[in-house]
Length: 330
Image 1: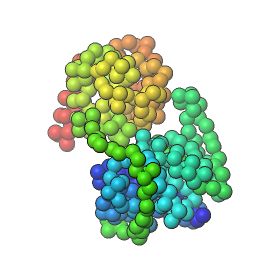
Image 2: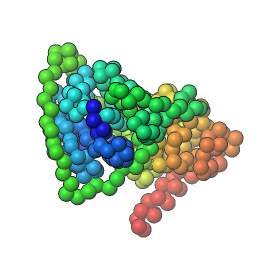
Image 3: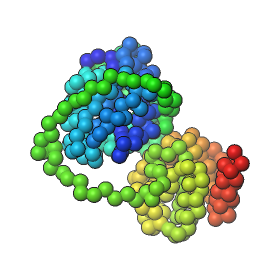
C-alpha cells in the first residue's frame, strides 16, 4: 500500500459529475499531507477522452476501464472494474461521491476488499497516518467522528458540495493506465434494458448548487410550475417534501429528506414546507436556507438563514421575475 489517494470519477454519458471534481480537490490536500499524489479511476465506455479533464483538476495518474458492458451502471461489473483498479493502484484511500451509485459501489468494493468504510462523510482529514472522518447520525441530530484503521484500504464516500472544486488547469496531462477486466457471467447476469429519465432537463437535487423545493402547500402538480420557473432562472434543481411526493405532485426522485435524498447545496429555498424532522435531516447541511411560509411558527424558520412569512404563490413569481431581470441587466 502506498500513500496515494484514489478518486472514483463518476460520469454519465461522458459528463463528469461536479462532485467528482470536488473530491479531486480534497484528495490533493490529503495526499500532500502524507507525501502521496492523486490518482483517478474512470469506468465506462469510451471514457479515455475524459482523462485530460480529470488531469486538469490535479490527478497525476488516471486509470481507465473501458468496456461496452460498462456503458450503464450495473453493480457487479462496476465493482469488478473498480476492484481491478485498486489492485493496480494499491492506494491508501479511495474517495467516492455520496450518490446513489457511490453508496452502492463503495459498499460492495469495501466488502470485497475487506476495507474500512464510512458513508456520507461531511469532513475528511488526517491525524498523522490515521484517516479521521465526520458524518451525521440519527437524522442529523448527532455528529460522529471515526478513526479508520491504517492497516487496510480506507473507503470513504463524501457528501456533495462539502468541499469546493479547484479551477481547471489548461494544458495539464496525466499518465493514463488502461486496466483490462474480464467480466464473468455472474457480473453480467443483470441486464439494463432501458434508462428512463424523469428529470425533464432539470438538474438532480444532489448535483445542483441551488435547490428550490415545494411542499404540500403547492396543492397540485400544476402549481409546481412556479417552482420550476424559479429553479430554471437560478440554474438549479427542483425538490419536494415527502408530503408533496406522496400526494403525487412530484416524483419521489425529487424527494428531499431522510427517506429521500440528502442535499447540501449552496442555496436551498423551501417553499410552503413546514419543516418536518425527516425533511430537515435531508437539507440542513445547505449553506444558505431561505424559507417561504405563511405560518410564522413553522419549524423551518428555526433553521432558515432568511425567513419570509409570505404567500408563496405571490412571492415566488416575484423572485423569479427579479432573478431574470438581474441576469438580463448583468
